[in-house]
Length: 554
Image 1 (cartoon, helix red, strand yellow):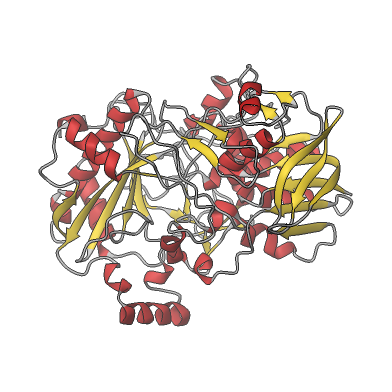
Image 2 (spheres, rainbow, N blue to C red):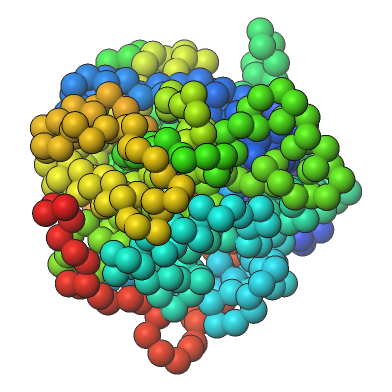
């Protein structure tokens, strides 16, 4: 028997394993359904491009999206230790301060406002450039600036400024808006995943056991208390029960966590009965409130060899590999999406609602068209969708795929803002500063201009940003799943700690916020006093309503 069982070695799970086992009197067992992070592409920054094509993932897809012409989306979810932090594009963004203040003020989550969570972002961070009111340099997670930028990146910054979008050297600092380089979860030109940062340094701890390749089939409930988990430790293996003395902590992500709760009979009773699972605890919010960022993109052909597309050729690939091994530079050291920015689709928004990612090539991600000649991609994602989806079980078989329904664009506002963001991306690509680099727009193509045409294009070509959250959200109402201290009401000894507890999606990539949830969650589980709220002078959140051009006119 162990004190704590953590189900899922994603970003939050790795943090919890480290922090809970700091006290040698606590015994901790971390279980991961996926394998070890042995694949060399995981640790090479540019290996991200191969991750979306199926390496170290479950291979899931969404149900047909009824508001997007029944499109079925590939939905990459990590199946490896480190979770999404082992296969993502390594972009380190936290969201806007207003996101967390809304959690506190509008959702009633005391202790989750920006000044409360900023110390946990800083505690996690080993920043290679900054050490100030907004950044820490003593943490475990490596955070650094890109080491392999290309001249087209600087031209993109000038193009943004030609449209009135300022350059921003730090999206996680005093203001979020602008264009600039992303900071990356990298250290020494290698990916700094949660596994590398939080587990690798503590492999010798006697009180921590990490098991991979273990599928947890259900949480074992006895007289209203979570007492352990049922597992299968290999394909075709026998069921076994592992017991927890103190708590079971579900940390399997915004898809995996509700899936496990539902398999355990915890969730909406009607749904559970319909697929043959006996309800143990009727909790209607489990698997609801799914939110995600949807990406619309522009792909342009370049005037010459200005991106990394040609490195797909065998002899170029060999040279790039040698350059990386010898010098830790070049295309292999690039995450390929290390330049971007935050701006506005809705000119009345109080903070940026569009995120841009400049991709140094075409066809970088699975399902996205690759050009014959060198190309460049500019992704645009609407950051605060109003649409809400669900995660449900396909059957009572724990090995079966879940029914993932992001319900994209069920709210027409999301469609309108997303298409405005696409128009903004097109306009940036047409600016004078990029003319030496950009020959012509290939997708959507200059012949597509009307809202209906761009809607059709989006239904054919858009993709997930891989940012699902919210399916076990914190709160106090009937649809909440956990309390602000991450406990699941009605069952003792059970918590959820990962992106699924976020009530609203942060206005950014979600890896850094999930690691923050793990850091804060560890203190909550251990009963520690929270870190003191951040204290600093000046305005920490850009309140620039009305600055944006109305891109609907572009």
